[in-house]
Image (cartoon, rainbow, N blue to C red; front, side):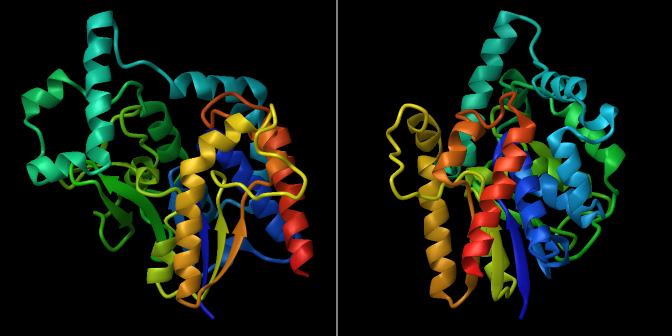
Length: 320
């Protein structure tokens, strides 16, 4: 039976959530990296890249908790990572306003509206220079990825979901459809939130975060013939008996996940309708206050990771 591991988007918080879930799977006797196919979207693409490149689940777990080497995962390193992640690309108010205009256009284009009126035509160079499509630099992320990941794709059955900016088309980037040595570029593209970070250029095309088309890209694993898939969806949520979504500490994170939760449910239903067995691992309602409203904000990493591990263990134990 062909197996798949699908890691969905979820920002900085989602990366910690993935680490906790993967640790629970390992403790239950499953080695996530041994799946026949691995699909990652946005933050999930980064975790998938490290897993496919040889980083162990234990390494990911320790670093996500802040218990790795100080230069990689200590509190100071985490704060520095967040500051570097949001390094502004503007130096004055006028430039900031131009970038905001470019950001709005980039998001609109990524959702497919530009393609419908232009036929996917790439805007002219002068227009793109006047209204750059990115508010914050992704150079620090790129430098770290190039330092820690190989240039070549580590396996042929690894897919990073991205969106072609000016067509709005979702693309599953892999070793088969990208240039040699473009592994890091593909991972960076999958996590380039449109409007927030600049689009990533590859073979004359511009790519942004695959999460704009769907939070999990479960269909990629289905298309690759997987019959049993483990889906990790940080942007979804699992209902609990007796827990009200409108309670004071839940309504904001539930609202933030509402659209993604619906699209995730549709993808799960579509996969199961084709006879695919899907194990869905997503936050319980009681985890959402820990995960918070803003997936890109500073957070208690250890609490996120441990909540994900414990609550995933609940699901796995209930399955038997």
